[in-house]
Image 1: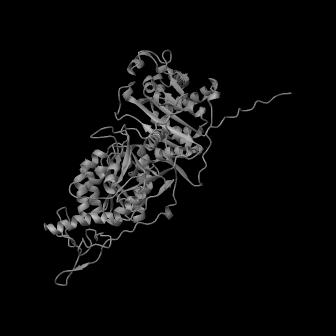
Image 2: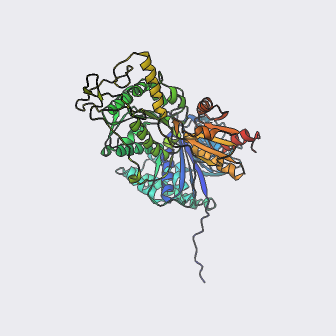
Image 3: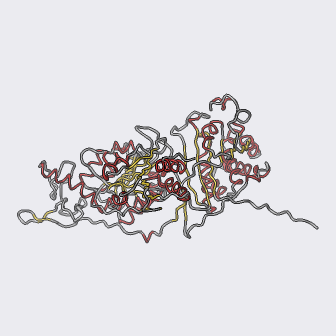
Length: 625
């Protein structure tokens, strides 16, 4: 009797967190992105966190040059890229030293041992080889692989020079991890063909390296390490993997289509906002015009001019750029023209940490202009939410003739998640009206046009320049209410200041939704990208029996009308923020509640574990074990 060998059953896990780390030149962002894309094709829910230095090329092999990419994939709904990685792929000693302390206890370390030679060890600050001495790797599963030499061996028959083959070692790592976690191969092979088409040796080398890594898992008898993360149950529809900057750009395009107006982006390149300019530049077919200006001031000036001419003007930047745009923002408030200002927040002040995340521009958005210059402020909570927030910003700007600031951040801008594409026909239109006829009679009974006559929401009339007979004066000097004529009258100025404030407060925004245990004594109030970590932390706490309410602000000016009611009668109001308590300052001043801050300003997003521990300490006075 002959027995037939059967393929061993691959055990399933519900989720895994993997962190790829290496030198800036090792291609870790590409490796993580390809693993993410293959996982998306497999149907997993996922969230990513690219984490890289600001320098174009930090010294090779140093801690400053470590570039990392963390991804969590799961068979269920997740909100963050995970707290502690289960697997760390370390391509050199610096990556190991920089990121080993992030790894979960008992986790797996996959190491490129070819790089653990004396010179690289010294650059990373080691006076010994942790693969041979010390307790650095104690308590972890270590898979030490000669990735560089195996990649060169795999490419040797192709005629690829050893130096060129070395550049493909990231695909070896990708192949190995793809085998370990049962990722589909075809999406990566197709991507290599598309990305490097026409460069036959590069295509061949990358495929050979990927194949060598894939085979290594089996030949090195790592079968006990192999698992699969099954597809997550998702609603039927068409999905794509999207980051926050792309979602923002698509939301702006949708806003233009819903309003029937062409989009004009005036922008100056700045990390991490530049990808919005790149993405919008691809979509001229949707009536999008992009202009790369010589500086931030010219960028916003061109966008405001476009709005004056009947386009939807947009400018994108990060914190330092907002500071430079301040004078023109005051002009936009005074002119009462629609304008979208996208601020992808980053670590500051000054140049600060260009590639690290922070959310410390809220008070600048609220008050960072000369004079009384109020404007609406919105903040997306996830990468996908950036699409909806961009449309909402367009709606407010156009229907209320006002500049609007959107506060995203580097974590949302670069992080990705699956997105079920919406039915565009179901998106509500944005109503835009321009005046085409006289709207006033002068003292002699003659028809004329007044640009500052207002409706019940204090929104002024607007005629596009060149509309026959509707000539009018407009500018930054204080104007008379109604006529728009220059006025230095004290009473009129006071009236205009009050109108500019009141018209922002009259903008209708949705009521704040309270989730979890709505009547709980403890309320966690959040804004922006803290949503994922807060939601995950509160899910854990509720499983432990804690009763906690959660409310998350998208509209930061004006606040939702029911915010005061939501805050009332709470024993604890806790506000996690990636700053030193800016929303807490506003809440305490506006509603006179004893709101307490949980702050993080390390350039890294909150983890769910951090918030879980802190909330328990603040509400019970006990440190969590």
